[in-house]
Image 1: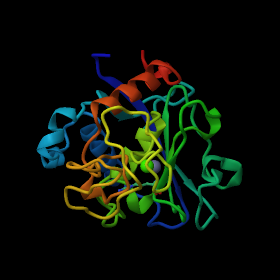
Image 2: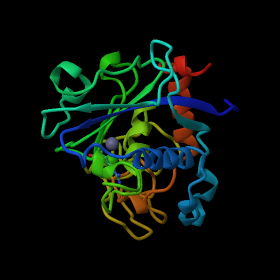
Image 3: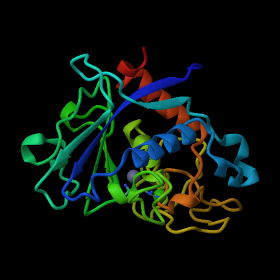
Length: 253
Ligand code: ARG
Ligand code: ZN
Ligand code: CA
């Protein structure tokens, strides 16, 4: 794929307190981060170690708040719902109006992003191929965007970058095998890596015999802090392309 694909986004702000009813500026700041990260236009890409510079990918994806609702009427791309639920978990309750959340917009036409008080994760995502009513990503409001309630060290908007990676079929870079060396992310140009990295590691971090360069911990699909992650690889972009050509082809128009 050569051309840039634009993904229409609906943000469901599900709030129990005024603080959780995040402002438009915070939403816009998240869209800006996605639009930088998926176009290799993030300023911190300059921190990628020299040895991996040629691997950094422009994923050629852009994200825009939906201007049309499912019924064809004009929309802002933001749905605000007040809820009695004080905190959500990764059980998908936030995705259902009848359970105190907000129903998904049609998943073949919109990327659904739910923003709420999420107790047990910074965010989580649905991989391609699941039930449409559960499709999309969920982000804790304090890990969403770069302003407002976004709180360090997760105030770089990278939780959404990571979760959109999953939504386009990317696995964690360490292969989801605990700390083992046999798991794979099914991407050829990422080094084999034992387990997740955290915080802000210094280069290199060697595991699984991947010396001298070690783990690609600055990849969006590791678990480091927002300021420590700043790249997708070409192999990852190819894998996202395959998701867009296959199970998510309804977005290619
Ligand atoms: N799914 C991960 C979680 O357990 C999100 C990790 C995002 N990492 C980040 N630096 N924002 O919450
Ligand atoms: Zn993840
Ligand atoms: Ca591993």
